[in-house]
View 1 (cartoon, rainbow, N blue to C red):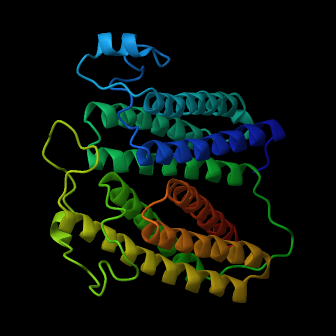
View 2: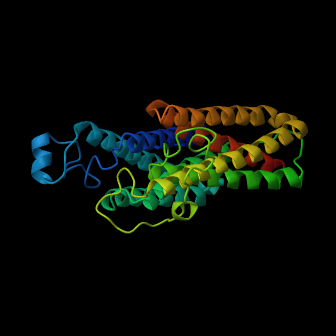
View 3: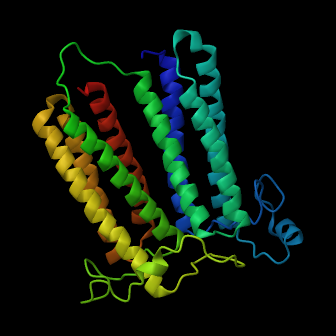
Length: 329
């Protein structure tokens, strides 16, 4: 499907904005600013961060932190701008539907980003309930991924002569994408439960112990009893160690699948070699960032970059899968 450059630019700008929102979301979580504003969509009843006096008068029981409040509001401003861009894409698509522009995918993305806004509200009103926080993170990745897929579709062409992908490599690619998404979910669960530093060494969890005191059963408790606040986590340390180790095991599985798949592509499909090798490059960076986060106890720059590279890795896998879809036998 060929579309106008204006439409393609609109989509890619929205995708870049979505990537920024993902990064800002990670920064907000990692700086503990998720409750920087106790209400939604405003902040202490205002659409901009108010003065300390105004904030304390509106919420006398809520400690006011100007930096955290601005961090949260900047994230919301970017997310609100993204909604406007997606609305523009939907309108453009429907206006050109007679020219076979897609309408279902843009509309689905719009509905998804509205649900994302609700998850953002529940993140605040439910005081960082881990399941909601993880869903909000995954919703951000999903919005970014679907905008990326829409952009790929908007400019999809194949040369006259191209190498076809056999059924095996195509199916393995779909499975690999599923493994990567599962690993992103584990990463979100780790972040939502403040389990990133529960295991202090690498590759073992605690010194000579591979799994420390990991409690894998409690690690998968997806809905915690409602409490006053989940900031800094509500699970005990064995449960957090279990979450951390599950994330590491997921990384091992994702690395195995991605390596086999990318090398398979390199060996069989000449036109996709660069994309496969670039995906492996992103994987190496992601693994190094993960190790750095453990060894240096979650430095802010490395932790935020870990989220962003994870998003880029997901986009690379989607792009390869889409090219395989076009080339499938």
